[in-house]
Length: 153
Image (cartoon, rainbow, N blue to C red):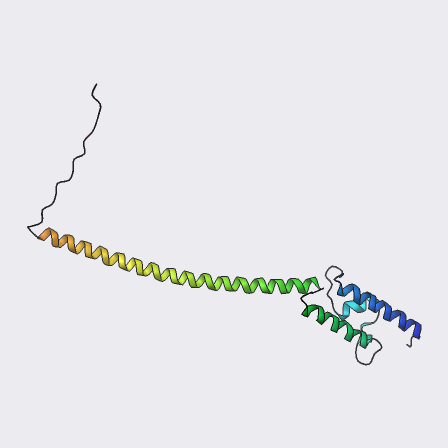
């Protein structure tokens, strides 16, 4: 069905207004900032944005403006912004996890080494005590007596 020049101009104005709203981030709940949403918001058939159809140039303009916003770090689509934020957060958490695992491995190695040293020191102490018990020149000191101090009345 053919439309008049006035209808086409009116549709283009609606598309441009919808494009401005979407690129400002005025998206309905659960909506994405894409050509499908643009067509729905403007009340125009989505197929009119593709190929040699009448609004293909508006789709190109919309995608170009959207890409410029994304390159500038502004993402009008809240879902896309949330996905990007969660991806960055996920990457940070994975990095922290890798660091934690490395620290745990280092501490486990340190613990193993410390326990081995303690065991070796204990064995040396036991050996020295046995050697000291067998030597006649070494005499043991008597254990000190504990005295009870009391007050005389």
